[in-house]
Length: 297
Ligand code: PAF
Image (cartoon, rainbow, N blue to C red):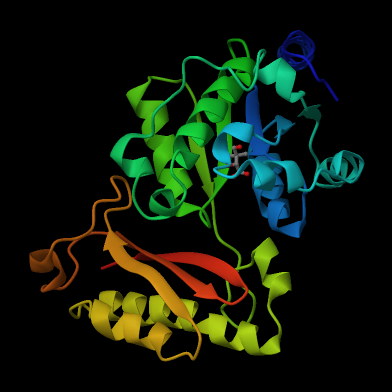
């Protein structure tokens, strides 16, 4: 494990040099950025990174900039020892786990310069968490700058499709800021019931688990309409969720997967012409759940 930028850069450069010397002309380096508190949901990220790369780097850093409530940052679980064991079990090679002061010297009065996620960061999850995606972009840009391997290595970074908005935003950031990293999306994992796996599910009792199924049912309903070439009846999909007692729908929208712009009423009136993304968030007491599904025509 490395805790400083200099150490982790040396570790990565040495490994890349070893791979080149062993006859690999362009080693592939995959980064799995995390905030720790690792669980099996992270396993899929590591599994894909391991399968696609010669070297797998994990970062473990609880990023204060992406918490809108300071107490949420303070209470965020920190389980470094268990995380290091899990990274090893998942096949990670190098862990970068810096302290807050190392990433942001002078925090909380730093960093002065931050990345803005723009309009994409102000909608959906960003609407209820002002500044969250600016914080994500700032730390991800820093992590990419620190952990990008030297030539001739290729660099990839892994993000779960579960956080579809985050995935779209970091993909756009890499393009807009010309950062030489390939974003690799990792498919969302569902329970056999259809419920998207999330660390929040443990707070649902059996009743809550049942009600939460409304989210994936609504998404499947839209995906079926899309594949059958039928008009996407978004109101009927919202009603599937609202039909569950005590469940409060925050949003269910169909958007362009890259820009997150909602499809217009005119586009929704016709069968889908190209891939779209259905995003949903709802309160299923005591938790707020998000889910999403790509809709293919
Ligand atoms: O998805 C997360 O765990 C975080 O937002 C990330 C990408 C590690 C940045 O802190």
